[in-house]
Image 1: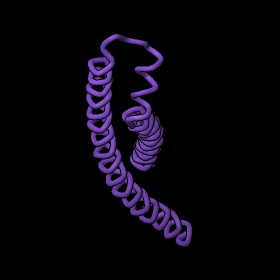
Image 2: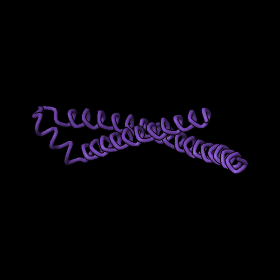
Image 3: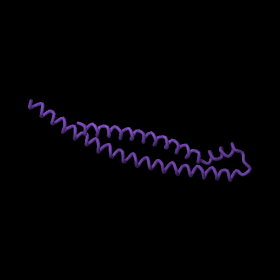
Image 4: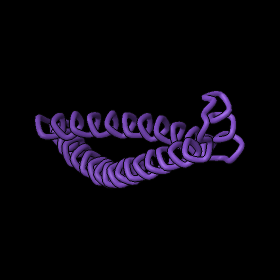
Length: 117
């Protein structure tokens, strides 16, 4: 029973990790969508218009470069999260199988012992 308990606790921790990863993934996807929207030419034009600069083209290029860098960084983080999520899901499936197997063994043995009484 102790082994089963440890595996069930491990499973619960993996499931919590999965939820945390999904939340992080959603947050970063939202940030990526915002940056992608900010990269639209009309968004960059609005940004430059609000700043009021004598060198609007340089300001546009700086803004575009900064947003593209942020977009690449967000995509990198998202791909890392997706890899972690995939690995966690594999671990969860494997652990769920272990839990089922152990439960069947333990409770099968308990039922046999009770039948012998």
